[in-house]
Structure formats: C-alpha cells, structure tokens
Image 1 (cartoon, rainbow, N blue to C red):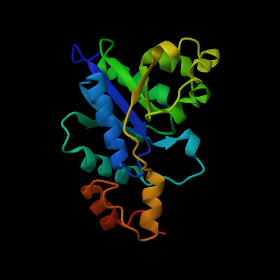
Image 2 (cartoon, one colour):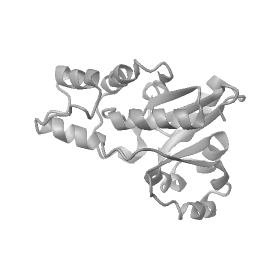
Image 3 (cartoon, rainbow, N blue to C red):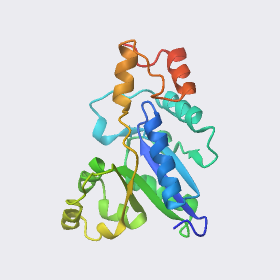
Image 4 (cartoon, rainbow, N blue to C red):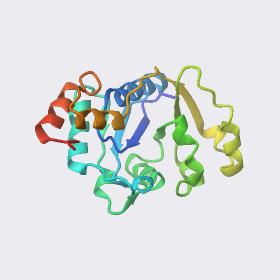
Length: 205
C-alpha cells in the first residue's frame, strides 16, 4: 500500500457540517496507509436518513471546500449530490472505479459502528470486491465481533483494514445543536466553516 502512488481513500458522509474530527480521521488514514489522496464524497440523500432533513447540498459542499482547502491531498467529489435519488455506497464506488481505472486501489473509510450495518447495505458483497474497507477504530476499541460478518458477507474479513485514530469526541449532531442553542463551536470546526455557518444562518432553530 502506498508504494506506487495509486491508492485513493474515499470518505463519505453527510458532512452536515464537516468538523475537525472528520479532518483528523482523514489525515490519520492517509498517513497510515500512505495514500495519494483522500476524496471527500458528501451524500446526496442517504437512504438511512430519510427521517431527517439534511442541509442543502450546496452548503455542505461549500463547507467541505473551505475545510480541505489547505490540504493538497484532500479533494472533493460531488458525484453523490449530483446524482438523483438515494445515495448508495456501492454505486458510488463502482462509478469512481470507472473514473480512476482498475489499476488504482481504493479504500472506503468508515467507523466501527457503521461497519456493523454493512450487511444491510445495497449489494455489500459487490462493494467489498470493489474496494478495501478501512475501519476507523479508537484505542482500546475491540473488534472481536468482526469475524461474524463473514456469515453475511463471505470474504469481507480479508477486505478489512483496521486503523486506530485519536479519540475525538465531536459529531455533526453536536455542532448543529450548539449552533441552535447559541453556543460556541470554536475549535470544533475549521474557522472558515464557522464563519460560513454564521454568515448563512445555518442550523438556526
């Protein structure tokens, strides 16, 4: 990994908003796996979040642009927000595979908690054939249950990479709540993102 400069990390999510925890995870994974780049892919309409109204894509995309501007290894893809209908990871990875070519090894970044739900995703077996799954874990977090995924998705364990990252207790939900309550989000999001949120009146009650 990382030896031929043809490895790309794909970091998906609603990023509503993107925060420092996202950036730290992306950089830790990039360094650990010696990836050429990390591609941030904001979701259009995630099928598992239909019950929550998501901030319009143009705002989420702009906040990502502001947040990653200083890192030349971070890039943005609007593939999912440009696509109509629900966002499915397998569709995204297959489309990216067509863009980058078969010679590029691709790594999809997700958390240990998210990994538990992968068997319920669309075509999970096809997903694990199209990329490696980089599972972000916290120091001391146990993954003893991971082998049980083999029962649902044969071969998935061989496609997993576990990467420890610092424990950063920041969530987009927390940021939205603090903004709505008139509380400071300084040091939770990049300064440029904080100013954008304030300027555009996002997350107000």
